[in-house]
Image (cartoon, rainbow, N blue to C red):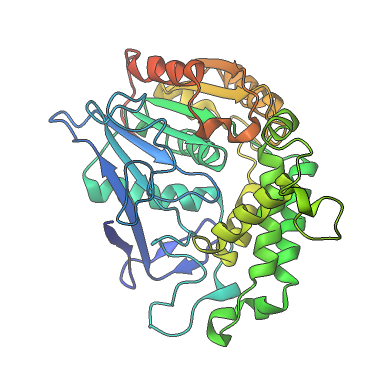
Length: 370
């Protein structure tokens, strides 16, 4: 997996807060080929616990997290499009984040890593485009936190994106959503193994806290219908029925498995920092926030799923209203699915055909890139 250093001591990354990070490495993958005109690039922004391995099989036999959407003949058809997907700033899969060592090679940043904003993630994405020699995107696509990044990008640098696909996302988290993340962070912060963020130096790990955070998140990613269909009230094994506080029910076993596998691929510090980015995201707070996207001619596809209660369709419709009031061209689709928030990762014909058709639609006259 390629990694590139996009910022260094001579050219540090200045964050929206004014804080600086003097070294930023970014892990990324590309699929397909950039055409001679340079107008077939699609940028994929991943969700909270995703990474740059968006499609295909890696060296460990792990399939990409969006194989249902990216690949030959898929909506993001890699025979036609040049698909770019990085691990985002603050991540833990090859891109600089709070668990990385500082530029001087000393101890990891830990809680000294500066808090991030959505604009910071986008700035690093744009620096990667510069590195790859891509001036303009055929589309930017993302689900959940990924869709929030796409929205930020189109509002702040609209001249760079022809089409924006924002799936199961939000422009402003509700109190309930913030509360879920707050409890998850508390589970991590209160784990004795967290050691004030210095667990790597002390040889400990906040495994219990991160496991609890992941289990609770998974409950919010599935609908009640999906949970009932997958697990019901089935016991994990007949001899465990009615026996104490172990893993008796199938749903308990599922959550325990998700927690265990999560520990092998994600870091607690990234979980803290990236959930906080989502909490503070509120791109329409300022007046005329969407005006630039209208002037630049970005087309929007906003999608939700009818069983998603974490980011229900009201979140998507708020984005639609804000964009429509500014005069932006917006298409909205609510897709029927029993699988809740996780639907954006799954193979659903109506969902995939809608995305494919939108990406294949002719571009309108565009303004000069800003």
